[in-house]
Length: 337
Image 1 (cartoon, rainbow, N blue to C red):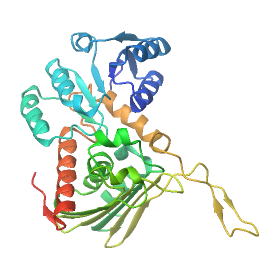
Image 2 (image 1 turned 90 degrees about the vertical axis):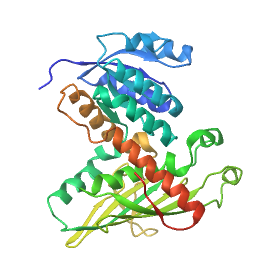
Image 3 (image 1 turned 135 degrees about the vertical axis):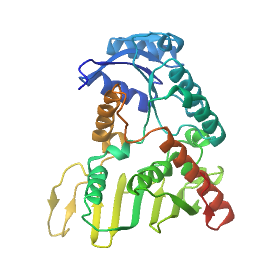
Image 4 (image 1 turned 90 degrees about the horizontal axis):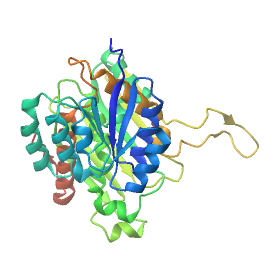
């Protein structure tokens, strides 16, 4: 049992970083010591609000022996350098997804940090979602027999800005990477060996000027023959659509959408009218983000392993790159780990 609080420094104060700062400041097991962002005004503002220290050079956190953990929520292109510096300074690391958009950089990072026996948690929060996690436990308990097929639906309520899309890496590396990871979460002692992917640009004009898709679908197959179908959309008129179906030889498990409430209305105009879906990822996965922090605190125990680590980030990016290759070749592509 770990009694002492985890002393933490947060790098990156964008939308996701600010959410993590809020959660960490309210978590009984964490003590927020430093915040860092390239925006100095924002850094000062956040440090004042949460009663922690503003730093304008990350080395102060790396060199502070009292700091247990570095929390990386900065721009993706900075992730690798902060991971390496954190590990070299014997820090526990939390890094938001993706590790990087370049697999070569990730592989180089892996070689550098291996000798330090790093403790790294990746921000694949969906593994911690109560529904998604529960069906994994039921799968392990053999409640549906042998797993045969995974179906994952992920649709955003509205597309991000053109500026964001330009540096996102595209729908497969930015959005579907979460689903690639979640699919890997459900296959035990197995790996995906082939991917077919396709995408479309149909309604939003900004996608037609970008090398990216508005809609995408991937079909994957594992070594044991398990099939997986993933569908993504950058827009959805009825909210943030997040569903998982596991089909087995003796039944099916479903992790369904989370709505604002479970009320159903029956009237002369509607047979059944239900509450809208939760708006976006911070709201929909709020419980998952908190449960993720519980694991991060436990990483002070040298034997503890989080649900998602560095290798999960690396393999998910490999699947994303294979999907991109398939979308260009218009055929199934082999996955090369």
